Figure (cartoon, rainbow, N blue to C red):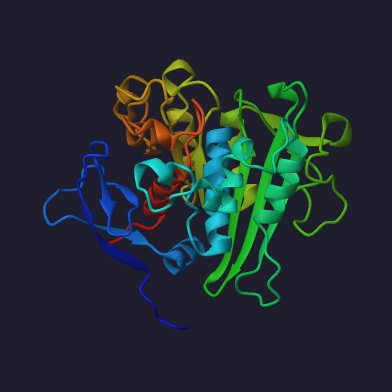
Length: 342
């Protein structure tokens, strides 16, 4: 195997267009610094090979709402394409792209409503196309990526009759990568008997993306977020990033002690709370909405709330959902939680 560096170290400068705790690297990409010292500023980020090596022989389970879904799809798209997408947030904030018509087609994965090929409320097409876009047709084993979507969205939308569970399997030179997304809008997770872990990943006897409605599925599991934690061993999970759904953590039952109890019984599985990015219309004072120091029990977290403090409006595509710049940094932070850069 060609021994290339697993991460890149690039200069990053403070810029008046960047919010506090962000800098812009030499390629024009905004980077989140957190509490990094501003002296001799440079950032280190895993490259594609480094991320593959980090994720190899692991199963990462994402549980959450659409904001978690889009981060999941952003990561799956990166693994397939070997590059991070650049969407319309780059037009205004960083200017490497001067015409939105040249933006990556991959942006459809995280912003389907503003993509030219997306019909209004055509979620079946989104489920079909996003599944195709996160799988590859390589004939060689390394780089082959497979994608499943246990998906259906009711019209009009009703959270309890909408289903979306995704399974990504990728072959790499370092070993197999497995990514799983379980939809959780209202503290409710359902899993179809025709999909993993209740059926083989390779089974051909299952509903197709966009067709997995209540009348076309049998749920082998139904439960809240705390119940869903106990499914992680059957999914062969090594890590999980968990949100209870739409509610802010301060307004829902604190599941930190449930996570701590689960990890006590399953120390081989690392579980993180994943907080929400702030709304576009309310990006100040993020600690009001999530503060890991105020959780009932001390657990690990991926704090997307603090990362979204005072970021430009253009980094969102609607009031809730962020574009490529923030999803990229969310995923870098996720990877570095799993595999810290020493």
